[in-house]
Image (tube, rainbow, N blue to C red; front, side):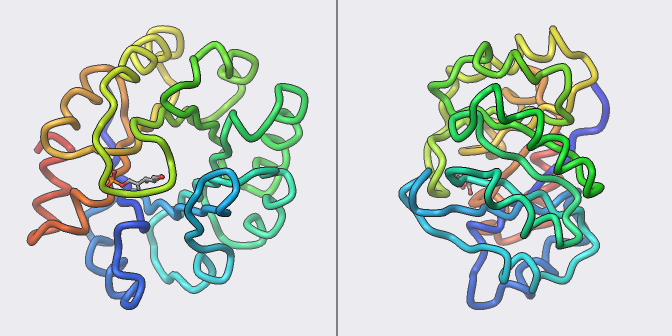
Length: 212
Ligand code: DX5
């Protein structure tokens, strides 16, 4: 398996010192995930464009849109230098996904689709061969610090078997115990919030998630 990317999730950072928090993981992480939540698709409200715009980092910004009607949100994020945008299968229909993917790519970013724990892989079979990244959620989106849902691993294994070169990201409850399960199933991009931002040594936490 190609290199495992580690993507810290900003949701678990101290929002009162956000730039310092990002600076603390920048030398060790591969991507930085911006968890955008609208209080409608998920219960929680986190942050939007103003916060993403304020972050100064050399890390590729991975915007995870946990929002309803992502087609209405894409433009404002695509005006920022974001590297990747993921929208949720549960917030879209097969009809509107191609235009969403095209809009993201035309702006120079890569496009991902996310599936919640209860959503089967078949729900995104229409786009899997066209998408740059599949995000398999291992918690119900909305909050950090939740327990890992191991049942989703079979979706990762099935997707990896079907798409050997696809970037498969997992997100939720990933720590030193669950990271090896994700990697063994075929994930090659791990999102972690608590396991990194609550760690005393964040560099060591990132290295251990990567399997180091
Ligand atoms: C949940 C977010 C996750 C979360 C991960 O809705 O999308 O990225 O912040 O946090 P941990 O790693 O603590 O489960």
